[in-house]
Image (cartoon, rainbow, N blue to C red):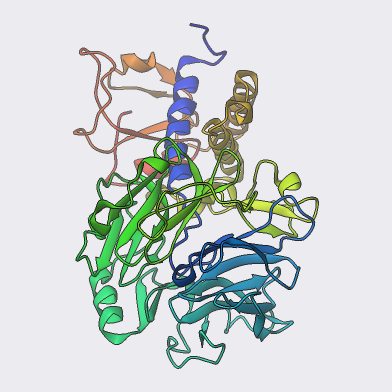
Amino acid sequence: MTKLPFSSFSSVTLFVSTLTLLSFILSSPSLTHALGSGSTLAIISATSTVCGLVSSQPTQSITCYRRTPMEGIIAVQPNVSFSSISGGSTFFCGLRSGGYALLCWDTRNSPFDPQRVYINDTVFLQNLSVGDDQVCAVVNDTLSVYKTGTVRCWRGDGDMSNQSPSDGDKYKSISSGFGFSCGILMESNRIKCWGNVTIAREIEHGFGDMEMLSLEVGGLHACGVNSSGLLVCRGNGSLGQLNVPSNNVLEYSQLALGDSHSCAIRKNNGSVVCWGGDGEYNVNEIQGVFFESIVSGSNFTCGLVSLNFSIVCWGPGWPNGSELPLGEVLPGPCVQSSCSECGLYPLSETLCSGSGNICEPLPKIMVNELGKILDPRVGPPEPNEAEAVELVGYTAMHCVNLEGKDRPTMTDIVANLERALSLCDGSHGSISSGKDIKFKKKLGFMGLHEGTKIHGDAAFIVYLNPSQSWRPSPDRNSFESSFGMGPTLKRARRKKELRSHF
């Protein structure tokens, strides 16, 4: 096995740092979709209609496939670009690119005649959410920070709805079900619901004070990932739609909830697992298929296939699940942005046909929010340390790409890690004693033994939990460790609750 050109301690430090950063990368909330959340896909249950935003065209217009009463493709007017669509019982709505206008279409007619529900050149909308007969969106007011984050709602006929949240509440995201909606509050990350009083209160009280990273609403239930990375479901569970089959930390990314079933994409490989609905949603058609996103109607679910951006639907409301003749559908909205604060989706320029980019969320480590993921007990990193951590995080993020061609070469990895080490070398002398440090414990599996010297700013190891261990061989120490670099050592050693291995 070829040895990397680092000192034994430095290479292990960055290796474990990379593993730690991977956990943050994989824990970053992804964009999720359900019966009532905006996506590039929409399901209209009552008319067995599926719509999507067209890919690889200068205009990201909407095209639909309706199975009943007459099967066929329906081109949706106007032929302009949209950023997201979401479906209800008999209608669906779409946000124009930029968020300045909201249109809806009744799918019981042919063709689908558009109805403009909202237009404003300064008060934009985002996070579109459609339930069975209500439409909501989060306000992004370019002239008033106070109003940004508030929610506006309409009935399915386009009139303003009296079922809206309190004026003072501000939301990170919202989702809608059968007669009610819920959202994650900006200030507390807690769940608040409005609309159908009985189920809204039941779900809101069910989540209680739990802080949430994401939330999706189905017919009469809701699921989301909490701040601990576990998937939690509340509400009506009469058909098993609350019974998550397995629930490892950070196991699931995107969610899609129907009337009596729930589905989720596994984060590690893009496969889909469904539960509830009397087991009618775990079908052969989705076995071995990997998805970019999924959406649900009341009695069937559809997914955007990673392989070719086609649409596959399954469930009792869509028997004999098969690929729809919709052509390629966008995996995300095309935006006028360089995606400098997030990732650029592969093939973005081709998928948007030169009219924008598809940005994909990156972990907080990549958007200048290191302070939100690093342990607050050791204080913020120095500028050079932050740059080093971001570089390792960037490398780790690309190392987990599904396609081998999208991963960095070993030469690139080594170069990035060497660069990170050189950045950390710039913080020498920050330890108050100014002396090198000796390990008191034998850490032979790291190439370190009692008396081994390292520079005080090279790295630190903080003992966290002896019951969680690594055991490379029976005669080696077992422990769980957290790595940091530079002056963080000085701050960590001052904390009584942390026990150092130095």
